[in-house]
Length: 147
Image 1 (tube, one colour):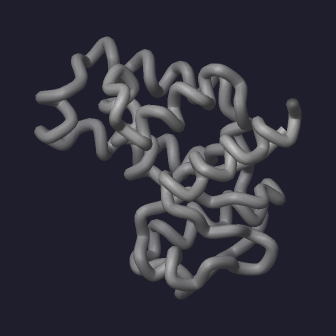
Image 2 (cartoon, rainbow, N blue to C red):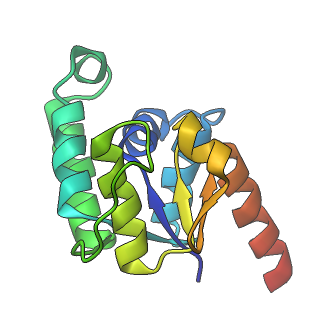
Image 3 (cartoon, rainbow, N blue to C red):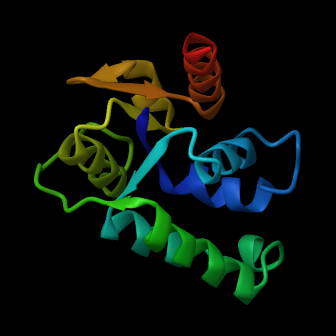
């Protein structure tokens, strides 16, 4: 089973786009719900996502019930990883270093992000830093190999 961390922006966009067939982050949330991969989050990611969902952009697109359901589904169906590794200066923003730390702590081979600085790196230690579109392609490739 493929294991991945999706950064907060990818998750937030994914929950908004979950009912839109042309949304790549939405497709990732649909694939996670279909158990195509194991999603790892940390308490930091959950808290950051909760804060993100208070932004008017999100409150106009998701009801309070939809936001609560999204956060509940992550708590129930994602793996919540304690952060056991410190990361400093890898991402564009310090809060994103904690997302990298989540992936390292979990031993997740994939971190899905839109952060250009991370994407330009390509990898960090044993983590492949992929855009949502590249990760979706990786999932498709893995599905073909299982046939």
